[in-house]
Length: 160
Image (tube, rainbow, N blue to C red; front, top):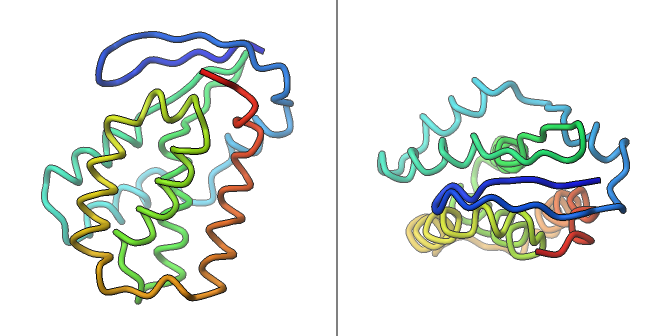
């Protein structure tokens, strides 16, 4: 399959061949547990600056096209973050976002190419401001983060 996307910062288009992505994976990435308005509501209720919220909304609009499938990959990442955020209300959004987004973005070449310039400042700012005092030793939280990362493993086979 051919993977296509556009870097939001530069407008540069890319196209890669990814034969290892199967239809079941693509269908699973197209199913959302949270509606888009629920994710936007979580973002709106964050106690962060309007600039950070604007970057998160921008991230939610990122898509890639894989064959005949259009994947809302930015929204899918934010859905995972919001789900974990709702399950662990005592942990700060910055820590969770930094852990999940940083791990996902660094491990998936396509997403890193598209979102790298957007996610890095967000993860750094939120991680510094909100995550400095939190404890990441919670084993259940670490398992959830590992499960989320595992869902994106098929995209690791695509190199940029």
